[in-house]
Image (cartoon, rainbow, N blue to C red; front, top):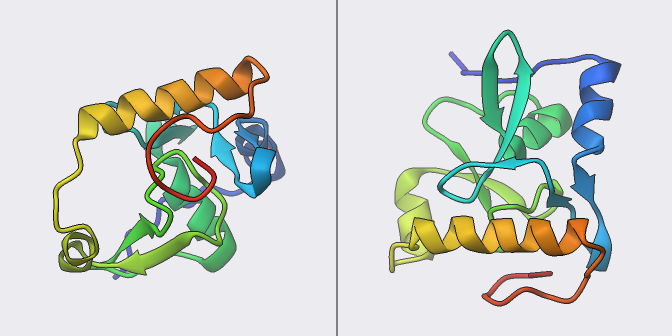
Length: 131
């Protein structure tokens, strides 16, 4: 059984698109950001999901049990489907053997969001494509 977070509808898709900006070839989330640096998207009924997971499910369908949507570019606020991939928790830790500092990831994601909302498109520190 899959655990879909997919909500559908043109209005919901338009609301999601309004929270994404596309400078430098990447799709950055400028909506709400959780304490771990990942985008948060309200899909209705009081339900909030990770923005990158919603983007994946809109393109490819539900994420199979035991898998997660991961960022190949190591930038938690990117929501383009191309740098996203499916994997499991073990695969995540094998790709990045040093545990990320989630507080720094959140601060970096918020700094990127603030720079983009202010009209600044220069990269904001750290690693990753387009970051």
